Image (cartoon, one colour):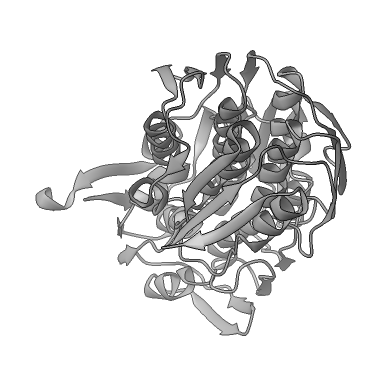
Length: 420
C-alpha cells in the first residue's frame, strides 16, 4: 500500500495538462455494450476506476485494445451478460452496464455495486426506470436480475436527480422500441458527453443538458470515434490547490464552461481568473477570503468540489460555512483536517470553518476519493511534512496527481509503506 509524502508551504506555479474525465469515461465505455461494432475512444484517463471497468467489460466478453489514452472496444462477442460481485464491489459506476446489457441482449445480471462510503446512493431509480420500460427485475442473492424481450419507450419521472440513473436509462432507451422521455434528468456535462457519444453512434437524443431528455429508440447502433471531455473535477481541484497555496497556475486542455459555479466561488475567494477556449489561468490578488457554499445538482456547486474548498477555507480569513445537500456522509475529511490544525465544527449537514493562520503537517488517512484530494491540498498548505495513507482512493480519480503537482513545484512523492 502506498502513501503520499508532502512538504508543504510552497505556492504552486507553472502549467499542467488536464486529463480526460473519469465520470464521463465510465458511462461512455459502457456504451460499447450497445453495439457489435468497434468504438474507439481518445483522451481516456489512466485511472484505477477506468482499469476496473475495462476488466469488467473484458469479463463480459468485450474485446479491448488499450494503449495510453486511446482504447478500442468491440462487444460483438459478449458471451454472458453477467457482472460479478468481485469486479462490481469496488465501484458504484459498475451499475452502468445494466441498461446497455438489458437493452441489447434482453437479459442482465449485475451485482449490487460498491464504491466510496460517502452515503446512500440507491439504485432504485435505475430499477424503477427500467421497469417502466417493461423490464422484469428481481433481486437474487445480491444481484439485480433484469429481463425484457425488448424495452419499450416510456415517460419516466425521477424523484431525485441522479447522474448514473439518467445515464443508464438514456443508454437503455437508445435501443428501446419507441420514445422515452426522462424528466428531472441530470444536466451534468458528463451526461451531455455520453449523449454526444451515443448520437455519434446513431442514437436519436434531444434535450441533453436540460432536465427533460427525449430518446427515440433505434434498432441498432454503430461504431464511432469519440474524444472524452476533460475532467472538470480535476480542473477544479488544481484551481483550488493553486488558490490555497497563493500560486499562479495555468491549466491546459480544460473546459471553463463546465465550471461556472466553481470559478465564481474562486473569484469570491479573491482569485484572478483568465479564460480562453481550452485554458484557465488562476492567481490570487491578495489574501484568501474563503467562501461559504452549498452543494446541489449541476449547474449549482458540485458535491465533488466541496472537500477541496473546505481545505482552502481552513486557512482563509474569517468564518465560512459549507453545506452538503447531496451525500450525508461527505464530511469524513473534517476529522483529518483537524489533525492538521483546522478549526471546523459540524452541525448536521453544515460545516463551520474558522480560518486559522496556518496548518501543520501530520499523518492523515484518506476516506474517499474527494477527501483524498482535500488532504493533498491541505498538505500543500501545511508547514512541515504531511503523510497521506490509503491513497488508493486518489488513484481512482486523479491521473498521476503527484507527478502533475511536482510539475507545478510541489514537494510531493509517493512511497510504499514498506519503505516508510
